[in-house]
Amino acid sequence: MKLRLLYPSGLSLTVILMSISQVMSDELAPPQDVHVDSALRWRRGNEHLHHVKYTAMYLIEEWQEVPGCVQTELTFCNISSVLKLSDCVMLRVYALDGWRKSAAVQAYSYDNPCSPVFTLSPRPGSLTVYMRNNSLFYKYADNAGYLISYSRDGHAPQETVTLSSLIIEDLDVEERYCVEVQYTLYLQPYGYPSQPQCVVIPTSEKDRRNMVVGLSVPFVFLSAGVILWIAFVVVKNYEKMKRCLQPPVRMPPHLKEFLKRPCSLPPQTVSHREDCFDHISIISPQDDELEESSLPSQVLLSSENLGKAA
Image (tube, rainbow, N blue to C red; front, side, top):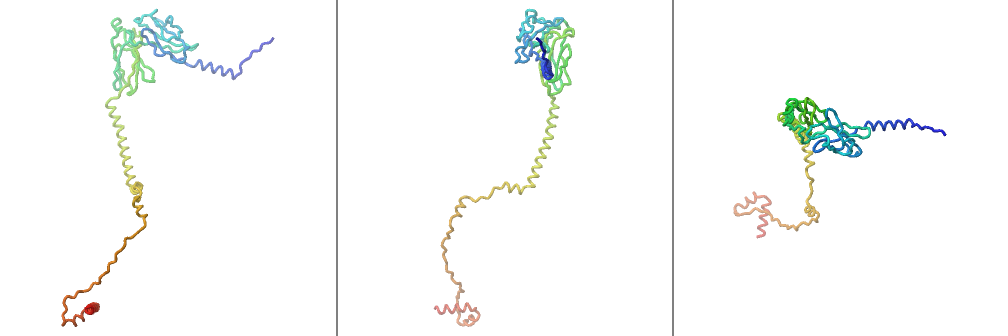
């Protein structure tokens, strides 16, 4: 009996290698919102992957795994069995999925004596971080300080160590900056980082006025240009616009009805025109011949007619 081994073809081997490479290159999402209150808690980095496991660690001289919180599918861990919340021990959590491992996320505290309390006061171009009640100062004096980490959205964080409040200058206005603070002891991080706080750097009143003026001047010139252009177009095309805007001449309906009726003229009364004659007021016998000779022929005829009628 002979056995023959089947080797994958070149195409199949390429597909398999590409699939393995893609799986290995996919980064595993780290846990989110890792914080400490009554216990160590976090949220899944990918809510759809429920088979991902998590491991919690604490730092005492070196990082060690928290018992009972190794490769767990839960999203919380009870650390009271090995630690006290007042011990100010640094904690972190990372995710595991087969051979893939996410980045470790350090836990912060909402309200804990191991986490600094601070407020932010933004000013044009700067940001002041006011620190309150360093609980380590009374025991360690100047060996206790603050590690202040600040970053602009989308940029890498910058860190600085200080013993008191800090003024951060040369910041970009109208940009969002986030600040996180942690205690330091002998220049080494100590305790839990605070919950990040974010603010927007405002612009100064002078810059705001300059911006308004800079935006207003072009708008004024543009408006003036548009008004002049409209006036020029109206003046040049006044007659055309007048004809276009003039409503069409339409005869009223009642007048149309009147003109459609047949034309009937009222009866005309003929008045007889009386001939006009010159009236003779006085006739003198001795002047008859003279008057007859001087009168026109029409007057003579009229006088004769009057005589005959008499």
